[in-house]
Image 1 (spheres, helix red, strand yellow):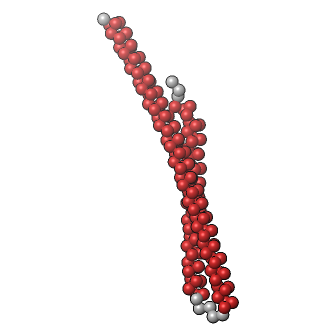
Image 2 (tube, one colour):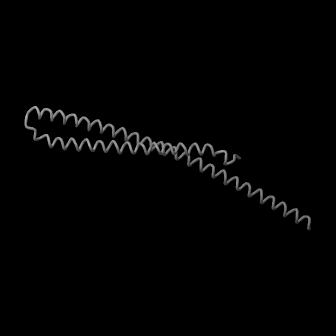
Image 3 (tube, one colour):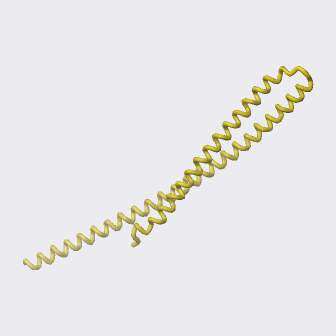
Length: 142
């Protein structure tokens, strides 16, 4: 039977991978939050500027206003795409973290099972030794 300690390096490696995946997931959450905040800012500014632009007096001001509004809307659309990509990265990072966490947990469970079997084998050997000793003592006295 293999000893539980033989799994230690694999277990440490799996735990390190799980930690790295958790850090990547955390960074992906932060990136998504930042992208969403940027989107909210852009859209709020676009709304605010659209309301303020309705008071433009000259036709050239109105044309400039409409062009600027179009650019703001384009920026909002692009930022929505950035948010969608950030959401995809977050989903992938979460799946990788779960996978790595499950791997580390499985190795930990295997190590525990091996340790339990080793302990049981030791107990059986000790019990056999005690039984043999008792039998020899009984045979000598009897």
